[in-house]
Image 1 (cartoon, rainbow, N blue to C red):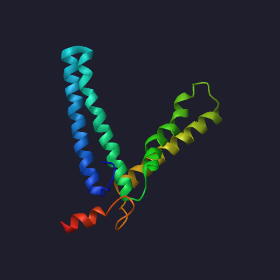
Image 2 (cartoon, rainbow, N blue to C red):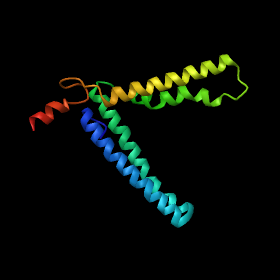
Image 3 (tube, rainbow, N blue to C red):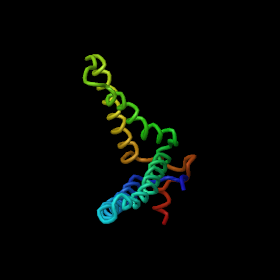
Image 4 (spheres, helix red, strand yellow):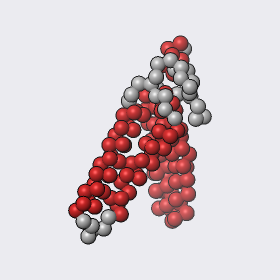
Length: 142
């Protein structure tokens, strides 16, 4: 399931399906919560496998680029870790501390943009790599 590679087009098609499924889960959860109170929030549990499928798709896309799970961790957790100090600063913080937090938050934004470009748009390695055969070669052979 986590093995193999995805082309950018395959990745975006899968992401579109996952977003639609998540929208359905959100609507069902809202309607169920309105009808049944807080117990109606149970359908939101279906968001967990959708989220995991998105992570696996990102990992398979990184495999196409020749990168492993460490890059997925960097792209997933890095922006939040860099932006966290900006959320912790209180109103009375010094200008230097505010500037440092702002720079860390900006670095988190740049990492997010880089991840988006790396996973969503850059072409994968040509030919087979350690994660499997080239998906473009497989689709052209069919």
